[in-house]
Amino acid sequence: MRSVLFFALFIGFLACTYASDVLTLTDSDFETKVKQHDVLLAEFYAPWCGHCKRLAPEYEKAATALLKSDPPVALAKVDCTVETKVCGKYGVSGYPTLKIFKNGEVSEDYNGPREADGIVSTMRSKAGPSYRVLESLADYEKFLEHNDHSIIGYFDSDSHSLKNDLVKVADQLSEKFRFAYTTAKDVLEKVGQTNKILVHQPKRLQSKFEDAYSVVEGFGDKIKSYIQGKIHGLVGHRTTSNSADYSKPYVTVYYNVDYVRDTKGTNYIRNRILKVAKKLADENVNVHFAVSNAEEFRHELTEFGVDDVKKDGRYVLARGPADQKYKMTEDFSYEALEDFARKVAKGELEAYLKSQAVPEQTEDVKVIVGRNFDDIVNDETKDVLIEFYAPWCGHCKSLAPKYDELAKKLKKESNIVIAKMDATENDVPSQYDVQGFPTIYFAPKNNKKNPRKYEGGREVDDFIKYLAKESTDPLNGYDRNGSKKKGKKTTEDEL
Image (cartoon, rainbow, N blue to C red; front, side, top):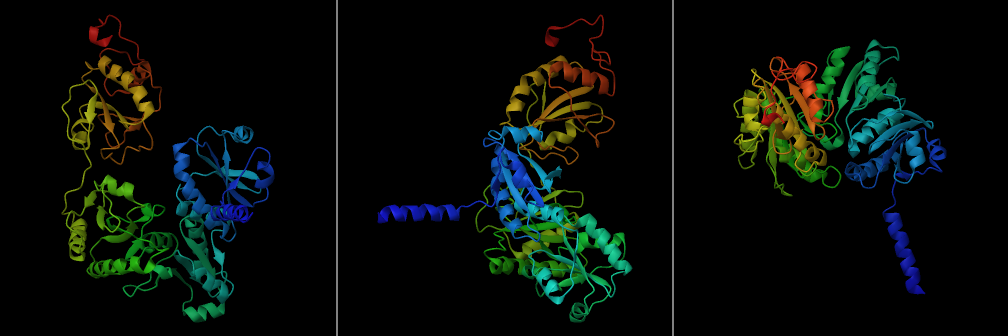
């Protein structure tokens, strides 16, 4: 009996330990439960979906954080392989699909970040006003306790013109940053600031190398640009949700950054980086610094050729003003970091390029890698149709024989190149937005800076009709409508 009781208690303990903060909704209770929440984010998923599996732990972490938010935000999930009625009602055709509900009704599709921090910041902004009014010293002190930056306006009246500027900026940036203002006299007296906007660093990022806050310079649109350029201070904590916010050029040091379990250890290293950053800032060297968790950014390190990410390793990468990639190859030291940052600022380093070896071109479809991209795709004497693929992609494998046939049919068209590139092993230039596979672009010879994404069919005739119409120079073997020119003799290669 005792063993049975112990087993029951153990199962109960496991249930409590692994209880999910994500609501599971069904056809029978979806409408009822959604109406119980002012704001709710619903994920429509399929258990077999790889993207859904990757989202699951981030979604769970976000749900836990948002339950403690003010106001709280609920996160829910619906298994569309079982709950077909509700998924059909909301037009779910791909997984995962995320939708924001307000007061029981669909408000909008969720198109924000897919990691915990980004989900939290986006949904917080959707749940409440873009700014808070701090009416007491207690409100003020609670607002500053947050783990993120705080942007606060201190005004002697509610009608001050600078307050109106702050509100406008908050409406534009509240998904990324936290805004508030106060006219409370006890707060103004404590802070000693009036009719100013301050950007406050969270306590975890404060150090002796810079002030705990900075005063925003300017009015109107200048407030927005100041915040975007200065909020991260000398050395920001760069995460997957704010990585796009850093001004270039910037240098990132990757190590075991952890502001939850090891703030002291994280800041021991960051403070030494701050010393380097402060020295260069005092010399007006134009370069920014950040720290990131190496494991969280494993994918980014891989893009720079760092495949073996060690637990206690330290890695230094950079982005130049034109998004060039730079990698510090020396053993890590703060002296080497300073030298590397100076060279990044001066443009004295050779950019890193992820590339396979340049192949011999033995097939009709030209094989593009990082090192021959300029020579072939950016050749201003030829139009290029290029497929970006992944070796493991099923759709790419299905397309391959048709793409080969297309290249064979057009191999005598001297002004057009049919090409392909493994986007998992080579750097893709920024003007080519590759989010999935296969992604196909047409790069006309007279406009290589603005290639056009191919959105047509995937049959050989579809490609030929497109190229016949869009090619800079008329094709020799086809009319502009894609029909084979009359009187042209078909060769064996074109069959």
